[in-house]
Length: 300
Image: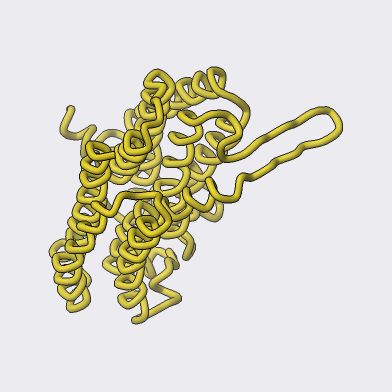
């Protein structure tokens, strides 16, 4: 029962949300920013459970068209989705209640996109937008929410709403710093999706799922490589402008392993044998960067 549940929600893929969370915590520790663990852990629980929910919805709907077997009877599978969605929603609303309307609005946006990634008349997963949205919500919004919850109000933005107007004031340097920091989780997450879509291209075409590789064609593999190189460029820039410690430049050495994996994937895009390389690259890049940020905190 437990194994079937873990397979249903594809627990092995949850490194994308977990690593983004831990890496952002490392950044807070490095900058000696106090952490509100109550808010942070409530967010983690809501985020993680909703991540399970979106995967379950994806599998529930996809098994209608791809002739794969669902791990549970459809009624049971639907109940699991509703329970996970209900708990994550309650936790999300509780977090918004303890924080402010910005968290409510951004959390609501994340929930909507998560549901409509697979569900609805025109799911995001059937368009050439999956890579961007997965990178955006895992790579940008997770760090943003954690940083927003644990920094003084007004650090990133000021939001005011009344009966006559809505005003938003963005702080340029904090937002720019966040965008730079988000490049690493954004790109590594997007490349997992891109690799998956390249491996599934022929099968996706049969079920009228026109993902990014369908439109980009053979250039997808060069896009795949270029996205990884962007993470290394981002690290260099962040060290230069002072967001990260020079210690983090040690992460550049991981390109030796990542490049080897890129070349192997270029030769063959196969779900059973080479897709795992995108997961390995994710763990290598995110894991080493996270570790080095924590180590930097010891010397800061």
